[in-house]
Image 1 (cartoon, rainbow, N blue to C red):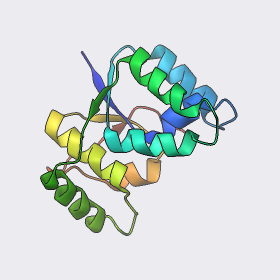
Image 2 (cartoon, helix red, strand yellow; image 1 turned 60 degrees about the vertical axis):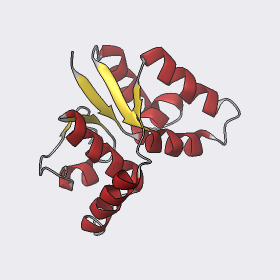
Image 3 (tube, one colour; image 1 turned 180 degrees about the vertical axis):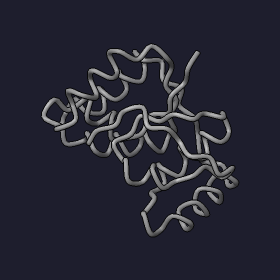
Length: 140
């Protein structure tokens, strides 16, 4: 079964009907039949962005449960070092910690596709093995 990485932007856009990308992201999620994988750093970032809405954090948790998104930890010292090395390599783009953990997860699980709104970043980023990710949604 196909597995696609999930970045913060599409998750937040899906949960916020007023987001400019909401309709396109909602349509993508409605048509996608594969599985999703993300990192705990993405969940933390999403929880932060939706915290202004009283139900925001609940909606994130519910989305994760309903979609059965696999959430992978990124807290081991070796992961922190690898993430900070990626962040340093891409400091001109720039890259945040959540993005770095997604690239590490892509490498670990040999995943090639990501649903993201960060076209600029993920067009430039490469996994530690040097592979580019394909963007599942291309908002222009």
